[in-house]
Structures are given as C-alpha cells and as structure tokens.
Length: 290
Image 1 (tube, rainbow, N blue to C red):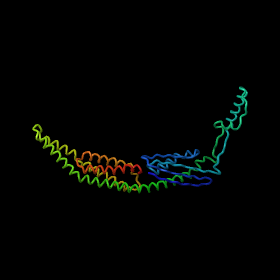
Image 2 (cartoon, rainbow, N blue to C red):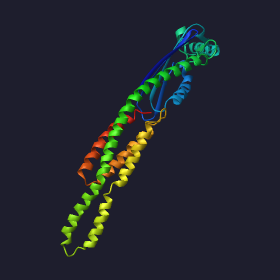
Image 3 (cartoon, one colour):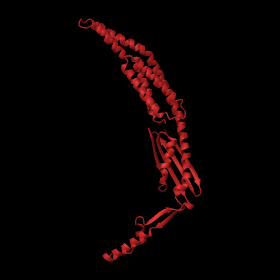
Image 4 (tube, helix red, strand yellow):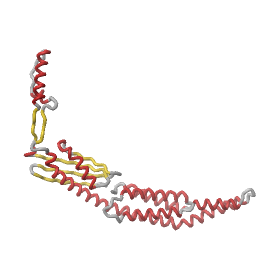
C-alpha cells in the first residue's frame, strides 16, 4: 500500500530528518539509507518498521546535520608514518631515487590518517533523536496508508457484493442447469435407443452419472462460503487481512472456473464470466492491502 511520511527531531547542535515511503509489494521489503557514520542504525530502523508494517516495499531515508560538540577529530598513526618515511629513505639510498615526500604523498597512505568523532560514539549519542524521528515518520506513513485503505476497502466491498449477487444468480440457475442437461441426454438416449445393439438401461445409467457430474451444487456451496469469509474480513479493524483476502480470491476463482466448466446453461456461463471479470478487479488491488 502506498504512503508517505516525514518527520524531524532537533537536539542540541543536531537535527535528524526522516522520510518514509511505501509502495505496493506482496511481502515486506525494507530499504534503509543512513549516512556512513550511522550505519549501525540500520538494523534498529528495520526492527521498528517490522513492528509497524506487514506488507509493502518501504524506503527509509535518514539525514543528519551536526555541528558543535559532534565534530570530527583527526588522528595520525605515527608508527605507520615512521615506517613509511624510513622505507622512503631506504629506497632513495638503495636505488638512487630522488624527490621529497610531501603531505600529499602522506595523506594517500591508507589508514595513516583516521577520522573519529569527538565526544564518544556519535551514532549512539544521536540514536534517541533518530528513533523518535523514525517512529514519527512511520506514524504519518501509516496514517496515509489507512486513508488509502479506507478508499480501497469501499471499492473491494462493492466489487465483492457484485460477485455475491452473480453467485446467487448462478445458484438459482443450478437446478435449471441440471434439468437442461437431463433433457439433452434424454434426447441423445432416445436417438441411440433405436439401435438394437444399445442397452437402454445402460444408457440411462450412464446418463444419470454424467448429469450428476454436471451438478454444480457443491461449487455453489463452497463459493458462498468463500464469499462469506471474504465479507467477514471487512469487519476486522486493525487486522492484517491482505494475504487471507488473496487466498480467498484464488479459491473463489477456482469454484467459478469449475462451475463454468461443468455448466451446460448459457445463463450460468455468462454470469461466471461476469463474476471472473469482477474478481480480476479485486485481484489487481488486493496486493495493495496489508
């Protein structure tokens, strides 16, 4: 489900801004971006998001502005510096290489100069502000997702009701479908019964079996049960119902498909096609539901 949230928290000589975005996704897919000095925040932020959301592709972007006591301190690895200069002197003497070693050369030596935060671990010192900003941004994100969810809920409920109406019409035509199948088989039996080599009793027995196979009563019962379960999901406030709704959509499609394949009635076939069309609208949107 799509949504957006933004929050800022300001402390002494520091501010933390958080942007949270989510788009549709079948599962919960979390992406966190932090400044390099605050990468230790990522697992904590992921944990907060997992507690707040169930589905969606979620992007969390944290921006930190520091000043004052949270400055940086440079330190030089003097042992490494001494070893580097000694080796440079040996190379000049042994190989006759000229030139002087300058500051640019020294600063290019890996790990010679290190940057460390002043006043302790900055990530730990600022985490409380960052945590509050993340939670505030997720609260705003959740609010926008709920607003979209209410609009989507109305659409899904209306569509499910149309499918329920079509399912009721299919059930009402089920008996007529059986009678139609019996009539067609009766005509075929009477035609074949004129052949002396055909046993009429056997033909009637086979016809009864085939007509029973065309009975869609069970499919209508299961279809009604799935639609009732779907309707019940609309009355579960605060619950994550997206995956269960997705499962019921698959089951409703299965029963509609079976009923359509078994039906010999044009009216049932038309209503099955119409119900599948409505169900496809739900299938497209249900991935947006948490």
